[in-house]
Image (tube, rainbow, N blue to C red; front, top):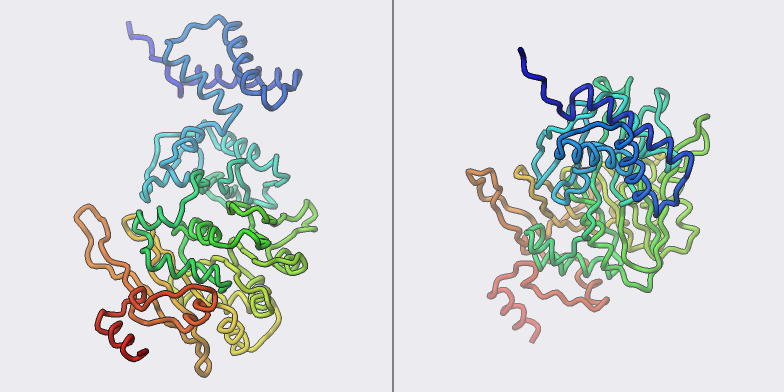
Length: 439
């Protein structure tokens, strides 16, 4: 006689039981419609009543897991809820029902978490996007959204996603990082921090460049904290995730088209509209299209002190991307004119990089110095020099000044920032010689 098969959460019996209880709970919620603040208590009560009515006995540990899974499904985001609750996880990636990956401490890892099927993944996507008025279907198979806590969500479904619906969640950093914490983490040095703070306060136009997941938005949040409290800030994003602490902030977010493909509100629309809102600062979460030209023109017509990010692997690549995106605006401007716009508008490019060991660093701070002929001149002020890679894969190196003082130093001094030559890497002998010359 064979022993009875042990019951697990993945067994057909438990899946049916779980679905029965979830259906029962949703029926009760639909009938009684509890207030939002009472929803957790009501769902827990409905679950206990529905389970007791079935007169089923389960091992205490199995019943506890069943109740947790159901509460996560009804009140949270199903199998992903434990991952979203774990503050050490920075990204959650669902590649179809049976493959869920996370990024933790800069490393990608496959989890043991699975959905029952692709329909369960679709239900979760709908749960995220419906309250935001967004939609996803075969005609519109991609969507950007956000969770209530500010985490950024991207979903894509068949026929575009060949192996089933996928979800990518970039988790919102609840404890906003400060510049001091970035220094402690080794992402930036004190001298670099002093320079970027002076540049932001002095209303320089700054671009944060970097690859996917390199920490651009985190750094943008930190830099925005240097904007004085008495300035009016307009933020523009695809999915609002910036967390500015100032009181006078207007947050704008794009809107997808309706079912007829009309009435979309794009980043470019919002950049243009923001110019009529009397902004002291315009902060664009990311430029990725024709809005780049509108932003450059705004920077060149009195709206200085703007901050934005873009995807590029180096400061020089960032300028090339700006050129390409400006051409996407459809204005048919000569390339030299666009480059002149860039050289006149952009003051500083901060390159943020995710290294091979998962650490994130500011690997370059570069001044845009002007034009020589048809070429934009750039001057690197700080850079990361890699020295070695440890046996455990850790990348070793130093963030060092190049010894070159930026041309905009005088502008910083006019705004009350006198950064000494030692900040930019001048040797003691050079400093003494400079002092003798001043005498």
